[in-house]
Length: 299
Length: 299
Image 1: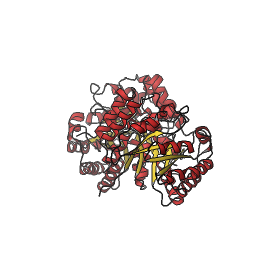
Image 2 (image 1 turned 180 degrees about the horizontal axis):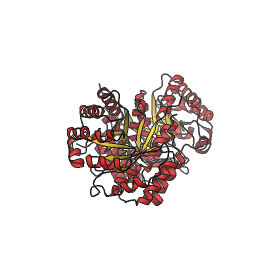
Image 3 (image 1 turned 90 degrees about the horizontal axis):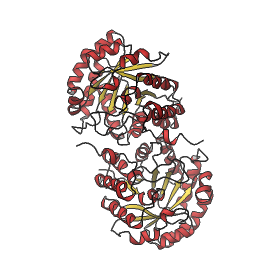
């Protein structure tokens, strides 16, 4: 039987959040519609943070009010605090994603919190989602390295995973926010997280800053992980992570997995079309993905 | 004990061969010197094919006459036929690399030969290298897919590997000439080649055309392969392989392997310097590698 891998499309949130171009709401809706046409069933579509800090997400309430409601398509909203969690729930997100941070250097600059403080905060606000019966997941950011502190102890990542699971996270993601991970370390950290949170469903969030993202996806899938974040075109980055250019591209992930015999449920040609639409209309600048340049396997 | 992975630097041959810029001999020698300073011990430096077909390699005899002869540094010359083999041996190459082709579509266009014909040819000319006591290796090109024929049967690759081993190849490389390989297929083809040529030392040659090269390196290293081709900057391509843009970049491979706990003997900073020298002086155009943009792990 063909094994299925779920790709969570993060282009409309993590992708657009850090793009130099502010995409108008109208085009964001078109972007989401194109993703659905390509088979996307689960996507990050909004971020409920302060609009002054992330201007590209200032229209998140409006986006959530206008996205098409299609059977089987789920929208994830990002929240970093209680106010964001409340807004995400009120806006009709199908899921909320909360971010814990695995290192102090990044944590202080990104959300003014230490790793422990982000875990404490999740304890307090996860209950809001539970009260509303909305699933909540946790992404552990800079889980493979911090732009300011360098090495991130695997024990910190495991501790946060354990706390996320205890507080009721339905899924835990390890985020390589600045694109430093290598596949051997991916395997090691997955093992450590499994020890700390044996029942948690795992998701991986890789950036391709140092070209290792697909190697990391391969290592994660080999380690049994079934859920992978990616953005069409490989758009995105991180304002607090110097040179952190881009999520791994959805079409590149899909090419590798489908050629490797996995089912992603996504249409490679339509993903490539969407990447080209980003280049010509959505963002009007080149994107990083390779499949959008090279095309699929020759036939 | 730390496991060592040997990186064969192919920039001066496979890299330059397909670059739009014809690098003058003087700069090629500087390129080679910079590579040696970065720790490179084994590199493709010349190609003995017809200068009308590959103008960038027309000065190969001259290059071989002028490269620094340093203890422990070995130069590989490429040969596709008897005349090329003779020239490579006469020019003082420390090794010769011969190319078999795994598919007819590419074979007919690249060297006007079927897979079997390339194996027959190797039978005849390997003896020239043996007579001169020069090691000869074989690269099986388009071993993961052909730009014209599409799928390449694993049996053809295994057959060629068996014939290469029988004719005395001291090493067999699987070449993903057009960058279509995926890591699961890498593992499968390595297994098949091991069955057909149990004593052969294996080398892998990946292009990053579809972003999978480092995943393929990881799969190969996990499967026990100890020798990887790469080019500084990720320069290179293939004139008969549409959109085949670039070998996997040496500095990207070195980053992943060294972070994964392996020893490559190469100096990442000096490799990045050399990539930047290619951009500013050697080729005067941007190169594809990611490490040369992002830098190493933050410290």
